Image (cartoon, rainbow, N blue to C red; front, side, top):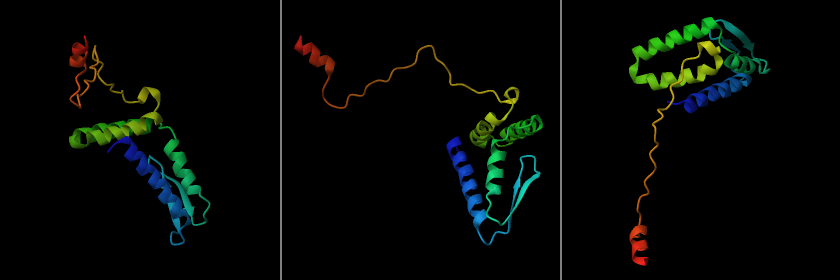
Amino acid sequence: MNCSILLGILRTLADILAVAERHPQIAAITVIRRDGQALLRHEADGSGRASWALAAERLRPYTEQEAMAFLQLHHALRRALPRHRGELDDIAALARPLMLPHMQPARIDRPHPPVWPLPVRQQTSGYNSLSSLSRAA
């Protein structure tokens, strides 16, 4: 799973919440903060407050305590679930912009070799430019 898939899931969650706010069979929706506290209880009035609360919570920067809890859980899950490290790192990449600068996980850059390899052109036909040039000379 990569960041674009996770972002798609988050957009889908927002879309589902918007439909749920207007659905006549749903009496109430509760939006929970990252720390587990109820942020908002939306009664079925179609005001769109639950969608607004979800969007606001997704954009709210982490407190130092929330960032520490997230990073501790992330490291524990990476150790416990080595086959899912890529997915866990994608989740951490989504959380990174919300963390205080000194709390952000270090980014791992691509290696920088001294010389980048150049692409080799594949010969697709019987034409060989070098042999054609030597015949012309």
